[in-house]
Image (cartoon, rainbow, N blue to C red; front, top):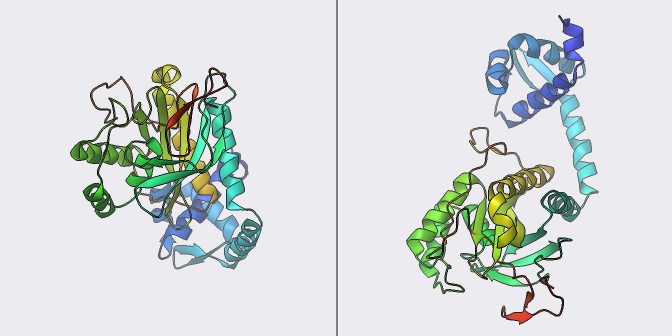
Length: 315
């Protein structure tokens, strides 16, 4: 049996200390030992020793059986904010994009929603090293309804915003599979919101599969979509894995930017279900993705495909 001192000094205890501080940060008022035990799913006996240590360091203050953050926690918070100011948000996002590119082996993109409301623009790209891959130029624009990135951004908004967007939308087909039914698009985007990830196949360009999840900042606002773009021929057997990878890295990037999801959220990176695809007539098993390009082709300045000089690559 481990004694109390050894439990307090274990790596698990470090994690529990962090969770205690996060719970106190999120709470509008002081929390009792029982409150913390329920919130963290940790025995009260394990938390009590940790709270005593935090109180000694002034990280928490105990009053009448409840706990709140102490001056030591606020001092550390101020120091962390100052350190955070020295790190550019773009560096944190690109670091996450590199991790995702390494883990997936595919092209990774960052897209932001345009002011005009109907399109998004690619602002960062890390290309796959595969001979057959997708390439897109920074500055290229795509429609929201027919891309995984666009659907992820729409899913991150409110129901009212989505209704307004669909009311104004005049969808057109880019392929035989492009979903143009507004009712079906609403269902697909709602499914993406529930899953936390959007996927499309052949929606803008035949042969393109994409997976996307929104990135949020400290305020909770969706500041962009993290996207994996891959040839459909290489993606269909691993759509669930790609969904999990994108969801995990989007969550990691959002966390590095200060975002903390509500505790009541039921989403989980450990079990990801592929959302509905809304693919139209030529539906394949799996999901439908953000068309960034096609193998062997490149998108021209107006969105048209042009034949690539570099075989087997979207270059």
